[in-house]
Length: 257
Image (cartoon, rainbow, N blue to C red; front, top):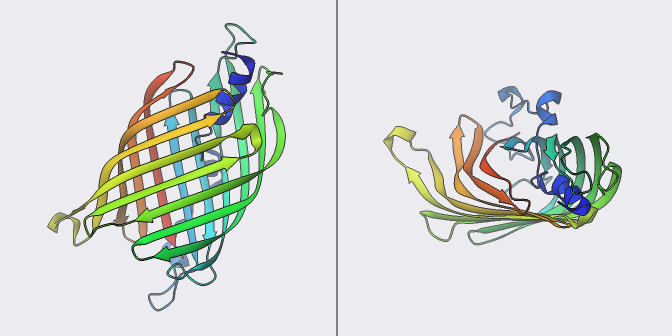
């Protein structure tokens, strides 16, 4: 693997949303006492998640603030913290495994638009990253501390009463990293779910940066509810341009306050 590809692998393995330090920080309270009452329109969504494959384990946590509520078009502010640990084998250091750790912070103002059954969110803001490498890899563009900008978009659409199309995309200036996910789901409900429901279906993901690409194909569960907490999960197969392949697993939790 070329030195530049090694740097890209670091960025690619962030998984667009890369995810572990929040667990250590305990930034995933999900406490029922902090919820808004039924008569109030929630203005804050707290979320967290985990993602793992053979060469990386990550965690994220954050808040989404909508002063006008989540049922209206308008301004939003997303605060996202994420981090994790990973490994790669740079071409500039033959036979040498490099292990890394990262921490990221994103502050992304944005807005929400809803038209019919389609809801779209757009964000643009600042991103800060810090990477530690053992041993040091001088060819890695992301080593040390870096500042950049990031654009992100999210889509949620229910074309029929029984189907879901959802996706997201993200583009960053650091190492020209970008990612995208597209998923389709069928509504699953029944007496065993106590009148609740969730979506089940396939998903596709891609993570790109300078000289590196990771692709994923898997199955997801979305909008499964447990009390006031909504969770999602996915499992599937991941492969990158360096020839590494393995299963992947992702878990996400969210709660409106």
